Image 1 (cartoon, helix red, strand yellow):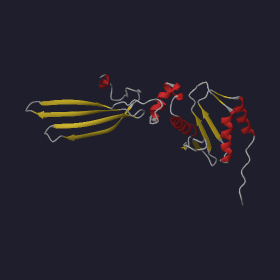
Image 2: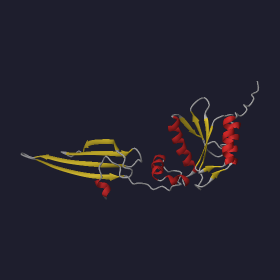
Image 3: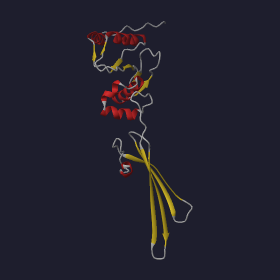
Length: 215
């Protein structure tokens, strides 16, 4: 019940400021009785609260009798499993800041959405989410120039996992097939094997041959 007594301006779940998103007042049809409805919403997690005011004022000869009734409405907070594919991204991003270990347990598709949001902010450009079955290992495309960046995202449940050279070679092969020279391989694994690092360094120092085009 303590939520009923919290300030209208603060979200009780993430302590973010609430924004007034709706206000509506009307006469009830009864003389002297007026009703007003106000809604506040948290822009971070979506939680909302509402307040309905019922005002009844009657003029007497010497005084005004005033009656005020407040009804508080609170949204129901839905619980999501950490690996739920329907987990709202803004709520997930907020929780990851407090519990980074969640990164190893969220759905792989959700990790792709997280990476999409981070890369969009980092590059300040459009990032397309293209990950699906048969995508050739490409999950995101960073559209920052005429030469887009292809991105592969790997969610490893084991934080001690090491990315092996096989995965990096396959990714570099995909870049070659797609005739692209820029790529980002994102993984929750803690380390990359020495072989993986050598492949990465080699890809920096030598440009893949361009595919010939028929004239």
